[in-house]
Structures are given as structure tokens and as C-alpha cells.
Image (cartoon, rainbow, N blue to C red; front, side, top):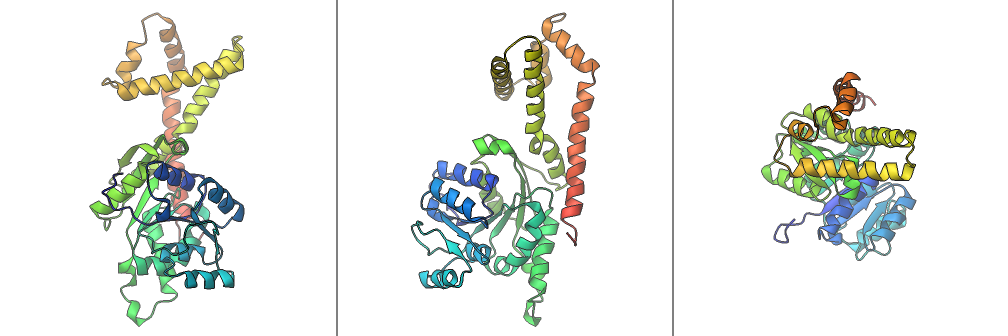
Length: 331
């Protein structure tokens, strides 16, 4: 993220672990704290974020989400909302005056996304920010429908074009290694998202993800879920099994764990840096009739490849099911 690029005003709706990971990664890359606001309903979480990122503007309360997106054009406006109890603001923040959000990052749990978006719909339509959703399992079409639903209740005869004036949506499937700035993310953009929208979204996610990949079909986000979204758990399971095997053979657990983790890191680094494909790398370290060959044959005899494929397919299928359950007209 270069200094020459415009650094958009960001509103995080939800201040959980993934939102914090993105925020922390951006700040580590030099993104200005003054351009970020976090709306988070849990007061203790706001206090934690305030202590970790001194000066960060956090909001909570019934009008927090709308205020984060709509901006606070004057201290008087902010003070009035605070006096009403509609928002609680960070008293240590440098300023309570900030402009409307140019990018809104929806980082709430999928189960509450509908109510959040319905509530935000009028300000999203008015301000037209880029909307980035990291909520698992909810398609862009559902998010658009939630916005239209929120507008329909207050629509007048002058709002005939409301559904056509909705902001663009980009859906992101990050993974938990983003918490240590080593994430992988799949991204999908609606047709009305411009190249500039894509650039902004990609630059934001690149702060915590070493690999950012666009997919042209939204259904492939489910496959992203099966590979990288859920993938860290697959490797944790493999490492857990290797550690247990070492212990079963007489090694102390600490040593078995340390060797397993470094082996995983080293193999990943080799795969990342080598020009060879993954199969070639495996063959190169598998001497015929050697120890690795014996292990690989045992894995293959046990149906290792088939098990991995079944796992990825199961995660993909579950993601599709969640999309129907959470993105339906009734939740």
C-alpha cells in the first residue's frame, strides 16, 4: 500500500478477531489510524481495541453502525447522539469528527448479518461505499437483497430506483492465519464493482493475506472455503497426528511438536519457493524403498488422497448449504 494511493475511510462493522486482524495488518503497513472506525456492540471488546490501538475510534450502541458509515460531520452531532445514549464513543480518540465511510467491512457473524444490513441499508444507499463482506456462507445476492429489504420499508414514490442504487459488494473468504498476517483469501466481486473497487479490496486484504485470489464465479467461493478457508484445520489435524505418532514411539511431546511444526513450515516454504509442482517435490524426497517411500505407501493404502478429497468436498457442500440457510428470505 503506497503513500501515493488514496487511503479510504474504513468502517468496520464488527470488531471480532478477523476484523482486528485486518485492522492490525493495515496499521502495520502504515495505514492511518485516523481513517479507521470500528463499530462493536460489546463494550469490553471496544475497551480491548482501544487499549491495543490507542486513539482508535470505536463506537457502540443502537446507532453505532449507522454513525460509523454515515460519519459524524460535527462534534455537536456526536455529542447529541452520545447524550441520547444512541452511541458510546472512545473518549481517548483523537477526534470525534470524521467523514462518511468509503469502504464498509461487514465483519459480523453470519447469523446476524441480515439484521445488520437491513438496518444499514438507507445509509449504504445514501453514501454508496464499497461493501466488503467477510461473513462466511452468505452470497452477494443475499446481501443485496437484505439492502433492498431495508430500503423497502421506508421507500416512497421517489425511491422507485432504490434497488438499482445499491452499492457494490465484494465477498471475501479469508482464513485464520490472517491473524498472524499469513492468510490466504478468495474474493468475488459483483458486476457493478469497478477495477478500482477490486484494487481497494485486494490491497486491504493483502495486508493480512500472502495470497489473494479472485474467482469469477461466486460458487467457487465455496471451493475456496473447502481449500483455504477450512484448510488450516486440515494441517492442524495432520500435525496433531504426527505429534501423537512421535509420542507413541517414545518421544516427548514438546520435541515431537517442535519437529512437526518446523517440518510443516519448511515443506510449505520449499513448495512456495520451488519451481517444481507439488508432485515433483514429493517424488524428489521419496527414495525408492526408503523410509519416506514406506510412509507414503502406508498413507496411500489407507486412502489418504480419497480422505482429503472427501474432506474438501464436504466443506464445499456445507458452505453451499449455509448459503441457502443464512441467505434465505427468512433466517
